[in-house]
Image (cartoon, rainbow, N blue to C red; front, side, top):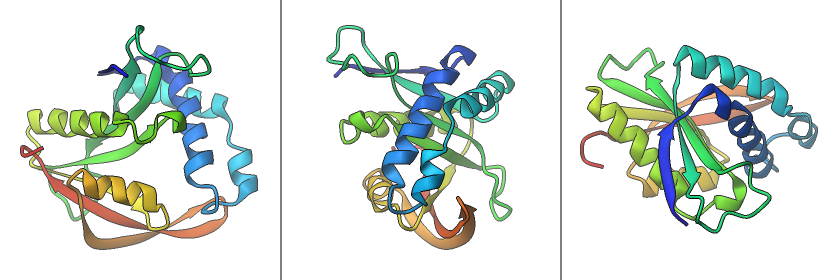
Length: 182
């Protein structure tokens, strides 16, 4: 599959929201309550992403399939996944630290290199903007994502925090990676 990377536009919000919901429903099955996952609404996320993209915060890159690739007909347009990133929001990190806030890939594209292309593009963009390091938070129970970030050069720094999702308390771990050597 040929994959390109570009900046997201407000017109991409619907596809971004669809992937957001589909990826949550697939990745967090067994981690978050089924009723919570079943009630995720694409329209609400679409409007939130449209506003964020217009505001430019966080920055969003999308991966898309080339029109001549083997994209299945049920794919949400040609968008395969996206990454949102910007300044670190962590109080213990200074202006040299960026943060990957979210990375989601359409479930039918998992393990096809799309996530790696996006995380590399985000790291390169952050490095080009003058950041020296990047951090991200991932659910402790999301073993697939933790393994992906480890393969991508991120290391858990042993920081953790509690987060409540769907009425359930979960633990997130922070992973970090130096930039400029990706």
